[in-house]
Image (tube, rainbow, N blue to C red; front, side):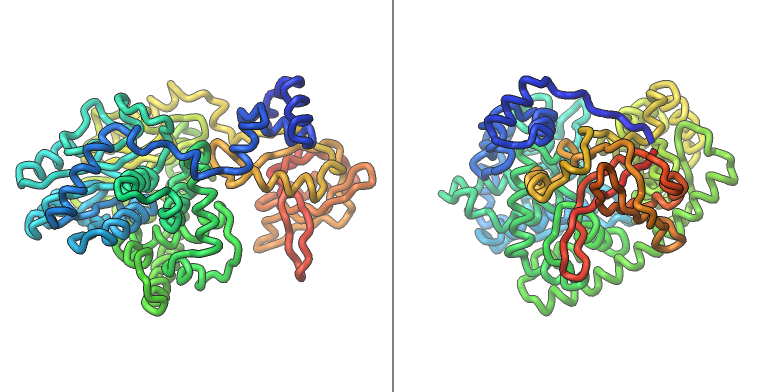
Length: 561
């Protein structure tokens, strides 16, 4: 691990903010690091408001999208809501279709089959629309590069509205409207919406035309918060407002589908991290192991008994997903070791029978193990399909673009992407990808980094300090949980390894007669650093531990030196 202490903010700014807000200088310093330097900015940060959301009509083509949808509703056209099979796509489809169904009975949903149709808009989906007299398709979380597919739909008399958040190519598809804040010609002030976020801006615009306010749309925000969490977009600006209110809906008034899902896991108050690790994998499991429409049906269901049945099925899919994920990860790790590829700048593995639905998870696991830009390939029809994952600070999308001579199709983000290529291109692509990464990556990025916000002493960790810290949430990219460092601590003498294979470290650190419990997940191997009364330093976040009905503060250790 590389420990990087963030630059100390300007003292005068910190002091002025601490005085203005009557807060600890450490808290003020954390705020300044996040670009919050005055009372008004702090108020917006600590009290997110729906009034801070941007005008949906400032998004390029929003007016065109609204006019076309209103026409379809008025003339009772058949409308298809089409989305990708992951969490962002299925929540988007559930969101927009459930809103449109309040105004039209002519709405249907479509999620492509991951295995038969692959990612994004498919010819099969367009043919289905044509066969069923559907004249308008609204695509969510996909479509920004589907030039040929949109042209094909147009030739069949079908109009398209695209709601996407992926990076466009050189040309924008010739659709009725293309909503994507990442368009170069789009002046929408916030660029980091997820696909469901773009879908929400569309229903916000449609609702405004009907005289509704943003408060009327609150029940939809549980879906938006889930997509924001799962798609790992920055939890800043507009996303932070949407996630903040969406979490409130999940915890206070969840839709029937979420209630059924959470009935399986018995968790009361959910954080954004719980959404990532509890809700998102289960929604994803439907598309990975069976079909994404199962997730859409669950998210739209209004009958609890039926929803519980759907949730039970999805729990089985998630269990199958875990088994496949574990087996394929083990096979991939063996392949890397046997092929002596541990010293490369990239990790690229392939086996034709690996389950296409879990290769993205496996890619993430391999990235955690070797900390390299990673690709996991499997056979998909006549071609090979892969999921890509990257390390912090390296743009894997740009690296794939540099290898595009060997790729059939690719798309995605800076840290996660997908691609297909011909089998005969695999070895050449693998070689080219290694060349591109090795010649462009900053070598220090190949060592995981812990970014430390501030130096802290144990006596500064008080219930009041933690209460304010909690209000920094929801946490995520762009607003990560603060990490602190304390030096010259000792263990009280009872530190021990715990958990399966004694993988984790549990101890109590002390300094200047102050002691506090600490837990270090996957830090069991560092037990020797805390024995024999020796001094060490810890990097950690602050957390709560509930035991026998008692809640106490504890350190969640990131690393020990």
